[in-house]
Image (tube, rainbow, N blue to C red):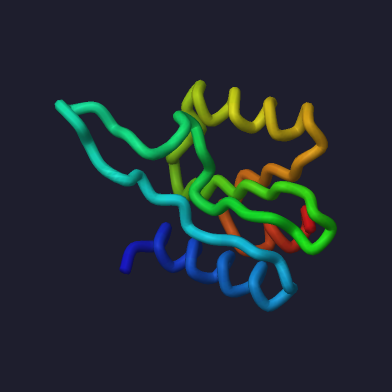
Length: 97
């Protein structure tokens, strides 16, 4: 497992034990070379918190940074009252929840 996969699993486990309904968002596939099945910029982990709010967690490890699509997704979620977390560690999630 990679560091990113380990962190994703830790975040999923933490949020689930707190009672939130979350899952790892994967790209579904490709048609004629184009990615399908997701909205560009969708966070790695998405779901619904116990409060009913949308939550999105983008995992960034090391020098990895947000793309413009990810920044736009974050802005759209936050404008609508959802929670978006840019997480480089499990502590980033704990602090924001």
